[in-house]
Amino acid sequence: MTAKKLLLLTTGGTIASETSSTGLKPQEKGASLIKQLGPVPYKIDVEDILELDSSNIQPEEWQLMAKKVFCYRTKYDGIVISHGTDTMAYTSSILSFMLQNIDIPVVLTGSQVPINEVLTDAIDNLRLAFAAAANCPPAIYLAFNRKIMLGSRAVKVRTTNFDAFESVKVPPIANVTSDGIVYTGWKPVSPTKPCRLQDQLETHVALVKLFPGFDPQLLYAMVDNGCRGIVIEAYGLGGMNFIRRNLVAVIGDLIHRGIPVIATSQCLYERSDLTRYEVGRLALLEGAISSHDMTAESAITKLMWGLGQGLDVDGITKLFNENLVGEVTLTPGDAVKL
Ligand code: ASP
Image 1 (tube, rainbow, N blue to C red):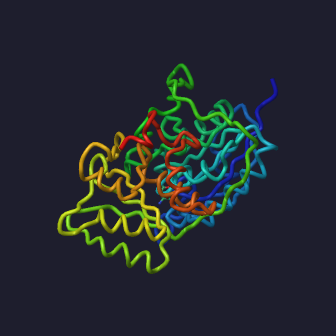
Image 2: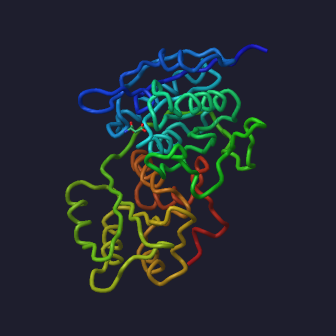
């Protein structure tokens, strides 16, 4: 059997960092990461495309990564992207939307400890990512600490522990045990058409975490300064205040002005359901769009992507009631429950 041909695109992050006088910063090249991997049964090419802490990774870098993956996908069996952990779940979410129907596995990974330190997790994570890129069905994944997660479902949940990522609303695609890659039965969405690069984004959006006392009038300040869509991290199943400070009424007004407002939950685990309580139902009646069980990372990037495709409030409402890449679990009637 011929060895699978894989590509490593490096972007920086802790995995490639070294100590400097200003703190840890990415400096290692991809060739050096590969050298430290030890023998693997794949033919690996490397391209260093960025050298950034992922706190500095923004939509322009997402577009670069998407273009590289799109161009290289016909030449390789799989692609690994090494990336800082801090914003990796945003990148894996947005790449999932920009590269729908991707026809090879694309796997993001990183590490909590730089590769050249004795107690590093980088080597295990990179080996896992290459194994996933060589074996998993086509999709965008985030692989970390012996878990292979769908890119649109992963969240960074820990700052220092090696188990830094979880697939919070659905099981990971696979876990690694002494049996190898053990699939959980949760499957990525299979490609239905040829992959297209859809990398137009609207970056003037906001993700607002609600807290008791939040002044809804501040949302007007955002919109008056060019904000084109808002994700609200509401309480519990998706509740938001309507007495004294009437957030529900402001949301209704913004929606009438053509600004889509998505309601997601502050709770990391499980879904939101705005139909259950009055504090959610009233928001739905005003036109708030439920994100169901999407992560906040997926909700904000899906909004950026949808607005970037030129969708208006109705188009965004429809988009959030569609499962594009496995990012959301929809139950029959979700869109019309009221
Ligand atoms: N600050 C680093 C980054 O996101 C953290 C890491 O990679 O673990 O680039």
